[in-house]
Length: 361
Image 1: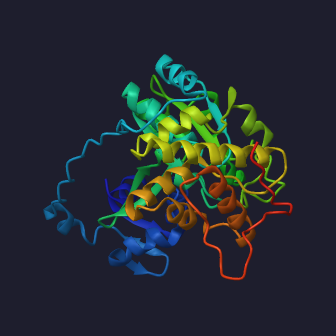
Image 2: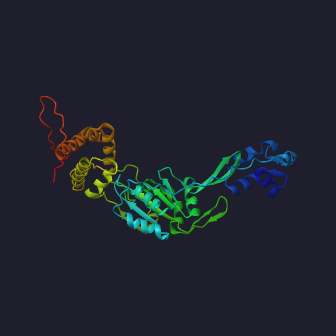
């Protein structure tokens, strides 16, 4: 049904601005959006005669809508994935089919999102991932009206799609959200949501659940490591049944991960040992930076491209400040006896002695 025929059915052929405003409020559109569609029917200011185009409308045949395309929402199984930490617990939650909102927190680059995707992939569960930002609002999550071929059509957001399909809804980096995320309150209670703009209630299908990932626990980042993270509403956080604290994998597990992408087992072992020393020093407060599992994978890929151990490490450390970079490089040269740091003529070998000290333990 078009806007014109809908208005005619409700108010007759002769309509006024008051009736248009009332109709606009009812369907959630602006007054201007409605009147733009009525320009051909305008009699005078604030008055429209909907019989003007009646003969034309009877002969008009609306183009058939394009057939819906069924999408495969099950992630691909990654042969390089190595399970660790809370993966098996997470997989049990998804396998149960029980609605059980789960919060996963941990430092960057330790496989939080990847683990959720692979759990869904192994169980052949539909998964819809939403990357949250400070700008994410109800329209992005729930949906809204979109202009399609000159008509305003309701378009489901990812949350509604997940509800209707019984899919896993992954809210990635949820601690970047503003208070607009509170539109999910009823959904996090397993009660579905009422779409007030179209007057329809959406019940969650069997299997629907919510998983959120974050670098913090929703209390902000006092050390400045995760700029942009926000303090989330306590009522919002309380709706998550449990929280998994995800650590970096052990040295042995990390070696397995690196061996999936690099065949040089000795190099993978050296990298895992090196990262482990850095992390222990980081946790003890000796340094301000850390080497993530993702960073190690970047290094092994750089090694496959350039074929040089030290060069691969150095190129992937360039994101850090000069002092940290040099300290990490110096440590790596001590861990891996197959590399030597170049020393400029007239300069002594690099010694690290500052608050960035990384000692081999």
